[in-house]
Amino acid sequence: MDDDRSDDTPRPGRPTGPPPGPTAPWDPGAWQSVPPWLADRYARGRSHAETALILGILGVVLLPVLAPFAIWQAREAEKLGVPATAGRVLGWVGTVLLGVLLVFLVLWLVAAAFLLGSGGGG
Picture (cartoon, rainbow, N blue to C red):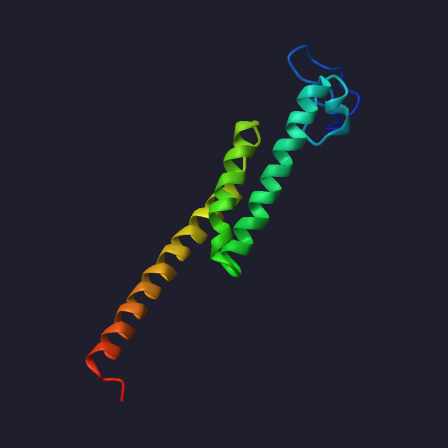
């Protein structure tokens, strides 16, 4: 008995070749049968998702004021059917950081006003 099965004939229940249809949404062949309005909608959603990701990264790392805009852009992308989870999560993290910074700013201003009002500045 030879164990080489390369000359086997295909059995009826066994797939023979790649699965039917596109394998991924970025497959160029996948968009050949898609109506132009749907391809345009996906492109606009993808643009919103990328913008949300960029604003989310900048909101966490550099400027927390941009974080709420990341949430807004992620919501716009999801309305168009494109997932924007990373941008949304980073937007919420940046928004929480913005809230913490605002709380510290208010506490600092209250402490400065108290010290200046009580004459304990020096």
